Structures are given as structure tokens and as C-alpha cells.
Figure 1 (cartoon, helix red, strand yellow):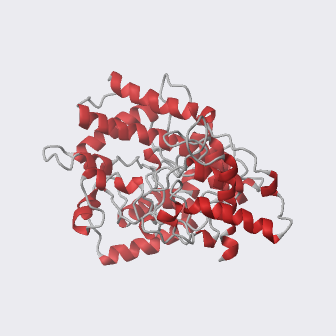
Figure 2: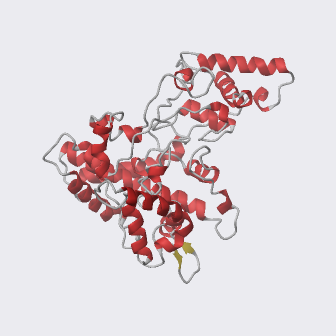
Length: 419
């Protein structure tokens, strides 16, 4: 079997073939599982060195969620039309391009290197970096529907919402390059997302991480434009054509938000002197712990609501992330009822799972365990999840002062020591 056919087989067996699909048989699912776990080891063979004949998968699930109450609308057709419009702007899977007339938000040299099949040309520079390292989980389209996606929890991230969890910007703003770079280099402890630090530390692959950062941004920009085009067509009847002014407004708006991200990043204050030095005595250490504990248990922060009184992640509040709510609750579907959510399986839906609050005693902080990263998670929240930002006392607004925030960070960090 040639490489292109092999990849298509993987996508079909793993229920990731472009377009609606049906539930595979037990034999197919077992084959999909075996093949999925083999994909990382077969990376180059799977994608080959020639034209891949693969396309971006249209966003069938988003179209289906918006047309659930409209029997006269065909979500498959609408998703395919939106995909065609998006391809006119951003090119194909193997030959991406930047939309004409838009300020370049990504380095297209990096995008071109990451896109397409794995291989080397006469210049000996390796290409197809995203397909080599990321497609197994995140899928060719960055939709989080790679061959192993159904086996993982949490599921791989769908970049097409343009929503990122671990970033330096407030909710509604885009991450900066450093945020994506940190996630790639550090990985996400406690999940299937590995660290790619070894690439940066090697001479041959030193540029891979930076180039992947650019390509992830490209996929997110492209995917969000496609999503918003679908929504604009269904909610306002705007034709899915690149010449439509409203469609062009979407394109400019999404690109503009990514270009403005660096100027909107949070400036994290330096930790106070008492935080960065070891406590001179046990009494001082316990004092800071007690102060942080009071903040943790206060109504202002509501930390115990999800994380529990001891920080074990066993609070009373349990909820789903925005990726799941997008096609369930917002579409009038109860994610707890299989009969309801399974109607979306033909369009690419995976079984809804709760977004579990972090158990701080494990010491595995998804967004990084440095004091400044934890400060960001508290002040900014974690976008796309039930984790909200904690109010910060500034500009006469009620909330925690920076001193109190650092006390809370100190307490959270030391919960691991008390497990």
C-alpha cells in the first residue's frame, strides 16, 4: 500500500475521513487502535514524499450544531462551501498561502516548511514538520481529530476555535508566540501533549519548534475564519463568497486580533522578596501558607467550588469545556445524555467528557508550574474551560491585591509538598 493510501486508511478506520461518517465495526475500531498507536513510529512512511492528495476537513460539526433546529438546511453542503471559500484565501493542505491584502500575521516560510508531506528537497531541509510530529493527535486540519484522538483524555486541542488555554492575554485575546512556544517546549504535564524540548536542543531540528508555532497560528486563523463564515451564513444569510464584504470583514478581524496580541499581554509583577527566598523559619512559612489558604477558601476567589477544600480537584462544581459546549449545550444537546449527543457523531463529535479541575497535590500544572505561570492562570483564568479569572484589585476595582495574589500562588504551589 502506498503512503497516501495508508494515511487515508488510517483516517477512515479512526473515523477521521473528511465528511460525515458512520460508526465503524468492532473489527475496524480494533484495527484503528492498532494503527493509531503505530502512526508515530511510521511518520515518514505514512505521509510520503510526494503530493498527498489530502484536503483540509470541512468543519461539519460546527455547521451541524448550528443547523440542528433547521431541517431544511444541509450542514454537510454548507461546511463544504465554507471550506471552499477558506481555501480560496488560505490555499490547500499541501500548498498553503496567505490571504492577499492582509497584514501577514505568521511567517509563511515557516508555514510552508511545516505543511505538506514529510520529506526533503535538494536543499536537504526537512519539510512536513507538523505532519511528522503533530498530526497523530491534532489531525491534518488542526481539528483535534487525529487517529488517536478518541483514545486520549483530555482530547487533543481543536485549534479552529482560535481559543487557547495557557496564554499571557485576557479572555477573548489571542496568545502570543511565547505562549505557544512554552507549550511546545514544556509540554502539558498530566496529558498526552509531550515536550518537544529535544528538538530545540538538537542542531538539525533546532528550528522545528519556532516553525510549528507559526503553523499552529496559521491553522487557528484559517479555522476561525471558516467557523465564523459558517455562522455568518447560517445566522444572517450572507453568501459564502470571498467577494462578500462581510466575509472579508471576518478575515480582517481574525487576522487583526492575532497581530495585536503582543501589545495586550499581561505584565506579571515580580514576586515579592519573601516569595523568592526560603523562609527564615517555619513560623513564617506557615504564616504565608495560612494567608494563601484564606484567599483560596474565600468567596471572592471561589477556588474550593471546583478544586475542593484541600485542593484535590474534588469540588462540587463539575462542568464541560467550551469545545464541548460549542456543539452540545449551545446546540440544545444535553452532553450527559448519549441519545442526544450521539446524533452529532456522524459529523465528528467525540464522547463528551468533563473538564476535571486540577488536583494540586499531584504537582502537575498544565500551564506550567513556575510562580509567574501560576500567577497568570489565577489572574487570567484558563480560556475555554470553567476556570475563571480571579478579580484583581486595580483601578479602584474590588479584588485581590498583588501581595494577596502572590500569597495565593504560594499556597497553591505548596499544596504539592503537603500531599
